[in-house]
Image 1 (cartoon, rainbow, N blue to C red):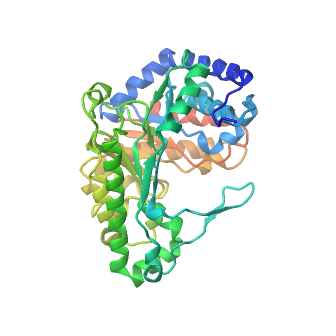
Image 2: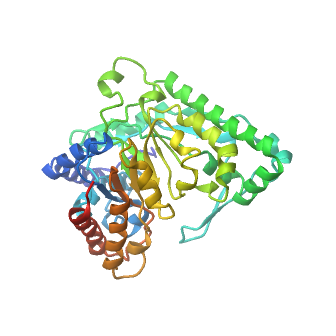
Image 3: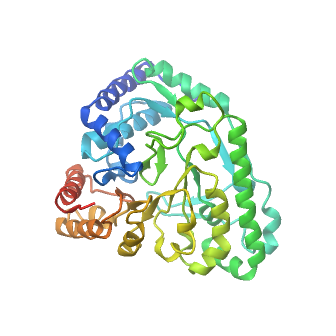
Length: 418
């Protein structure tokens, strides 16, 4: 059977949800948020933006709602719910799009290594099977990276969705930010402790490997450009880390119709969580040259995930000229970064600890208010964005999550000074 087959029964379910998404997208509150995101990302925002990322606890929200029977239809049903449930359940600043986005079926396989993952049943825990252990001995396993696009498969998927509900909710080709996380890819084929040993044992060979990663990434980007696969990132495209690309600075669809886009025309994202065990000097010597080479390809850049950026801020990250957002994680010195970002063109993208919402059955409102006030004080003079990520359970309590968002709104209303 065609992998994109949708039965008549499942089609009716998807059409019903497409109508709901379109209706929510037309709400005045939703339209207002779009304008606020444009202002925020252009450093003209009047208030901090808020997003509670649903994906990590979606298993407590979405499966019970699913009615489709076919595997592909259930995937699309899940995506439709993911497009509007934030607006319906939490009332944060997640925008409900007035279209259904699909992406080109592209791939990039670093060093042509097929990653092997061992997972524990019923758990988020997992382990990567190492391919490279001793870098000198195994260096020959690092082949030329492979990449490509399956345009036929992309078109079949688009056509199936168009036929199912395209007359209700437009189906549009969409590209999220260009996403590059070199050290994550390294620890996927080389365990983290082996990465540390290899930096120590074979420093020059490790640098050579990192330089190859940068060169292969740039070669992949040239492939995307040559095949006209670079699309605008100026609206609700995913920026990574629970944010979106709304901006008026990068060229949009009108310009895209006149010329092929390059990576300089779009937004990129990078992080390096795996190097928190390195000293700032070692990050600067062994990691940053690769990152700087790739980051320079983007029009705008968002940097960081859970790693604290303050130790490497002055020596490295502050030197990225196109940086527009930087992650202020639970392990980051908020006050230090607030002082350095105040009045700058870089958004203080706060990622609060997930423990307050994710642990226990009762929300600790006092702890949440204290954490928010600390952030609001540290970020005075900055453009602030708050994304709550990495919450893997809300104990099946949507009301708890909604209250979490409401309290953040209250604290902003009462204590934000901008």
